[in-house]
Length: 338
Image (cartoon, rainbow, N blue to C red; front, side):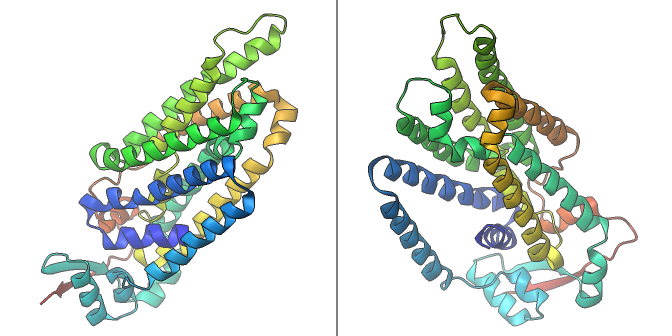
């Protein structure tokens, strides 16, 4: 619901130069919410945490009544006058060019099987699958249990708060980095850093699983590795797939296909988080971390050789990346604001 709708909405109302920054506000707010949850969870009962969450939801419902529909959506519905008013509300330039195919009903049915839809679909599904299997959400959702399993002799709640604080801080940093370096570059750096940090943490625990009688040294190493993993994940692999879900699909199918992809992403996350303890039982703690390391390496290769760059590209330019010459071209509407 809110995930795909918010990223799609921001993508449609933003100029290409500002879109990355505005879409990064989603991960920032999510990270802030998680940090609040970690802090409250350490000091108050769970029902108080739930009430705080309800308060934020009510604020969201009220706030959404104050903004108009996106110009792209209104043009899709044939409401050119309302689209012009929407553009004026968002304070764009006096003349705005919007691309949209007038043969919407016929084009939409064909569009689902074209390269402009299928290529982004498989790219996003693969990216979200690698994201979930890399352990990003497992570490975040099981932060307290994760540090208990590691036997690091530190306060688990405080460690989870540190994780939340790092996530929030890096969400803010990523908002400024994304327009400077681009989505693909940040995903490469992110997945590469995650590979190294999980290798360090997994290798540490594997070593002491083999040499059980040896006294543990450098006890802070796995903690640093996990915290650095969160650091690198927030640069790219956690927020950027959600941003791309609102960018890669053509306007006519963006809401539907974005919803399908987000549904699959949430399913991947649920399954990976749910089977965490089964993975521990099967692979042991070190083996689970090494699996996260291997998947992060696959993500690095995928981002390097497959993932397209969308930095400073309009939504129409992004659609052109996946388009074949024989596919339908959009009609250009010029909306003049007075």
